[in-house]
Length: 493
Length: 97
Image (cartoon, rainbow over all chains, first blue to last red; front, top):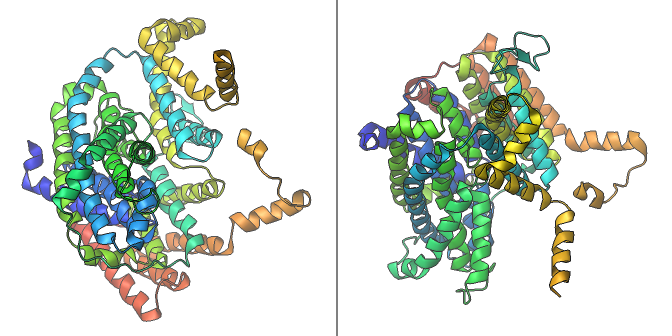
């Protein structure tokens, strides 16, 4: 019950509050904030650090919808689908009501996510004890494939980014034989590339540099006065929000997919399942606002399930939070629930608490909010850079890391110019060592006979299912798949 | 693979022209200048220490990126830096460069 501690409660509240604004300001992302926060919270107790990050995560996912509604600029990727119907509502002068409804619905979604997390994680954890190293390898491959195929414009680019991250994670000492790899003979690289540096560079500085291109755009002002929605409205949309929340939890729980994809799928579900929307979809339907809003907040709880039970991040933010757990000396995975169950329940309590704060902060302080969202990029970009510099310096008090970070920033900028996503890289960096060690252990357990290892991938039931899903994911992206579907249809005729 | 094949061929003449255009598009002027500003800032951190160098950096980049007017930039950089210093020194207990 550590989460009721007033000091930690304050941190969760502060995190949620800050998260709402970070998420709402276009140009600041939750991933950016959490990765910079990691290095600031080095010296803290693990509970304190987690409380703050959970708050920022919850607040940020919700906050992104605010600017999506008011300005038609999603403050976070998870809010892209919110803008489809949220902005038309604002254009009709119903921005206040839209924000009110989205707040309550987000909290509903968030709570469903927490409940599913609390119920499912112990079961998944117990089940995951049956997983062999080869299954972890397959799960990690699946995570990279999923994030690669769903987050960017092309799967090849996504997989490339993921593979690059894996290679980056391999730099340094070999975990089994302690030999240097990819170090070019220098001692400086023997410790590996610190992933927090890569994170801050790729998410912070590269984003700032990328936004130099859109510096001229100024947001439009909006009037928000009445925001408290009536109970009847909430009750009317409750069934839809519960349905889409479960979609959100499920998508969030898949390794590598997070709130953005959950929201898009939920929007799609609402468009297909709601027969008589309040208005046509895309023109200000409340259903189109509610579906993505409940789904993206529910996805938070979902994303924590594979992270806490398998040590495989559910999305980019949980990938960063896993990094934080590593730094605090914890090892996310099946043993986490057995060795430190209090940490799991602490996280669950914290998520619930963050959702309550979301309701409080979400329905107040709109006026201040409207001012902050209009912060021009010219002020924002220098601030991001200064914070990134402090964050990198704080890791080991070394300025060399700061230069490394800038290098990653410029590299990320070039990648973004060519339509590569940086999310898969971070997932790769986190999953790389896991893949490495599990692959080596799996091969060793077959006495280093490679074809025996391949055989094991298809002879054990869990491995077989995972192998088949990895193959399905690959094949469904190639031209063979539509051709195969056509063949099936012809046969039916 | 599929996306690359579907892509329209860019209207460039020869390799030299393509290279020149790519460099111009990716390494735009504002990007190059601002990166240079950041590098100067990082070099200055050591001799000048964190507070003065960050103040100069914030002020210069706000002017350059047209974030605000002269006096407003001065005030915003001072206030935000004060806030950052306070939060990091007392709240996060982080050593600043």
